[in-house]
Length: 323
Image 1 (tube, rainbow, N blue to C red):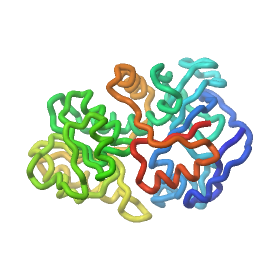
Image 2 (image 1 turned 120 degrees about the vertical axis):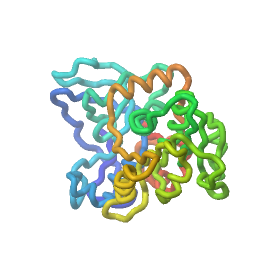
Image 3 (image 1 turned 135 degrees about the horizontal axis):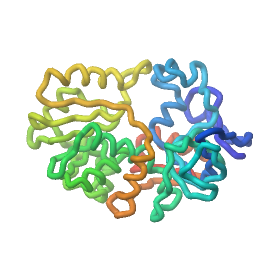
């Protein structure tokens, strides 16, 4: 099969387009004929091998254990393991697998769901990780309620674009923070107000929010607290600064230690891919409350170009690979 492979960590130059053997499945695994694969910031981190803590916890110290990158996928079931009960050959599915930047990828059954009928494969491929993370941030950790004022920092990115739509679906009043060039996108997603982070200060005391989602940002915790109501919650979703060793985890750990000593609640989490969340997202998608926002589409042999575009921070919503 055709696939993108890498044998060392580094920038997009380590990615190569080659022909390799198809993967084999066992047990509760599903072999998916991949039609489209999504890009997310986590895949970029796996490519460069940073923060270094990721290598220490088992992803490969000198080079990636998994040669084929890519996680988000949408496609057709090619084969199922003997323990699989929810899917059959020919089913259209989406979710998260191993080695999605290839013609075939392997996914565990409980990380897949049937593809929403209203979405193309390209649209479905950019939903699982980003929309699932947004859903968990808002519900499991943010405990969102109808009528709340919600601030989404990083509202034009992958997770942020879904967070705005989901928060509106839950009945919240949503303010999105983004760069000047992306404010129109955030408005189109349904945000009630937009703030330009180059000009507007969400922590100036003019407004306070019941829930703040800080998506891959790096504001000081004191600024997040100033933006909250006295009993509000701030959820830290990722983080792109903090050094090569631990990345944004330093700030996240400080938030967890500080939270018991302030009136507001500071939360941080590592998102999990769950079939139940994908099925719930299907409902929002089919009802028209959530629509994937795709910036650009790339063929498989242009994955390095796609990764460079992702790293530049210029992606509006999501980027997708077609196979």
